Length: 115
Length: 113
Image (cartoon, rainbow over all chains, first blue to last red; front, side, top):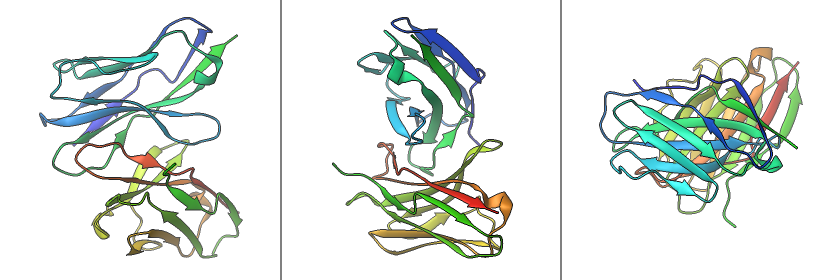
């Protein structure tokens, strides 16, 4: 069974600074996908970034990047130049490749960007 | 701009009433999911369809919940009878499988009093 753990219930950062959100996961499979979703107060779930486990290169999307450590089963999200609009809940999720496509989510990290 | 459409956005109902939530997945997506979000449990998968066939509903209380896909453009989640513990945000999501992005609707916030 897959599990996803986010150990930081809440974090805060000053505008324009960098923050890293942690995520660890557990799976016995070798092929899977990892995701970070953002949920602002509007409650819409928005994909931030996606990583394929068989790719060693860390995914990057503008100010968002990941540090994917497959052996350690770690998948952290780095937000650079934080903006007030980044204030949201952030969820780490995974699903297996080729099998059940259901996303398994962590409990989330509430990020507040302060002016 | 393709998106998953859910109705209702918000609903307050009395205990014992039937509740039906509807979802229109993105055109061309063949996988549809229903998730429930609560403060205590976080995001839980209730049901999952591929090509309209139910593949996994192990997370759904069978005695009161049912999920169906009458056609490729409509997924429904019914609760009958509803109970206060069903109060949550219910998300529908769709995707094309194979690890591609799963897109979420805006959610239906259900309050059962």
